[in-house]
Length: 281
Image (cartoon, rainbow, N blue to C red; front, side, top):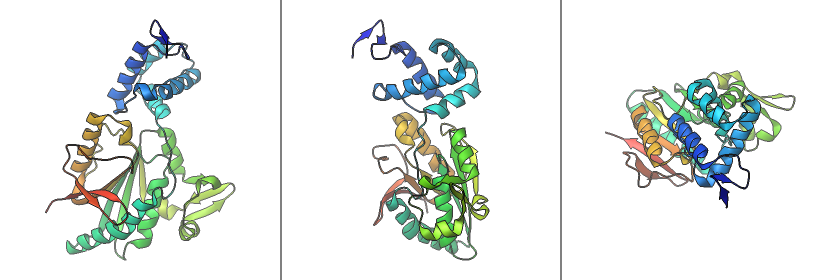
């Protein structure tokens, strides 16, 4: 692709130096890493943000995000991709239902404990934590309780998650038994019932920072670290490790891996999928 004085002829929107500057600001704020291969995504999102904010030039906008934390959060919301669905990745949920829950229940019983603590990190519009809550509500034995913290970098997505209303076309993959038990039919879609909503705390969180969570038994962070470079990935995974119980499980995306990473997590292959464990005796 040809360029003139640092500007690409395709759209002449960002010079190479402007791209580098904004890319570095986003990375410093969130750990999200844009490369030349996904530069067009960043450019299209920036165009959208300039149009909505009324800021006329990219240089002026750069000054704004350097001084205005609120606008930086809005930009991060704009550049993140929030694609999800209920019970996404069947193999993960088979592992969750058939191995992780029974194994943790047995472990907890042996210690005289009856509570599970989960974190859905990068929860997007809430389908993942609601899916986890429905499974746990259905499968945990009497006397066991749980709570789920669900976090994301996108305030817009969190608002959808907290509302718990999903259009008909978003309900694909929800088993009939859960649809009947944990949703109320509304015009144009379905509303998550309060018995499930009250089990989940939705919160804004930047994975570059320490969440403050501790004693976690299960962490789901799927299709999130793929947007980070190796250094940021390692830092996030170490924070997860420090936040988790000595007997706990980590789920990451099927296209993500901790292979070659400096981490203390154990690779664990079940009959259905690969997960990672923190097992300290």
